[in-house]
Image 1 (cartoon, rainbow, N blue to C red):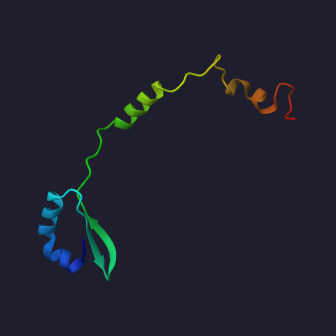
Image 2 (image 1 turned 180 degrees about the vertical axis):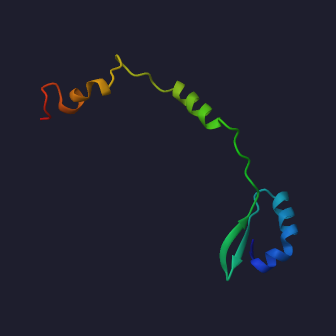
Image 3 (image 1 turned 135 degrees about the vertical axis):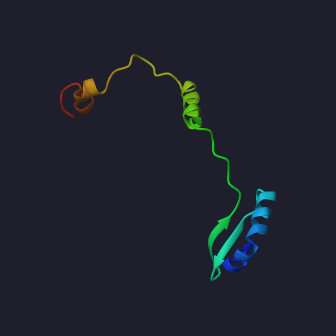
Length: 88
């Protein structure tokens, strides 16, 4: 629903009740027929740490690297210049 800002001021308590009743409802507030604001229900925030827990759970399902691990920083010249000492 679109309403001018003056109409929204008059009906604000009723609009808040309407949005509270219907979670999917959105009221667009206009100034000179341009939408400048929306009134809708607040989405619940996830618990702190949910993203980190999800990432850790996903990491457990990733395939393990093959072969032995080798530190890139300790062999940076090998990675940059190859076994013969220069990029060819």
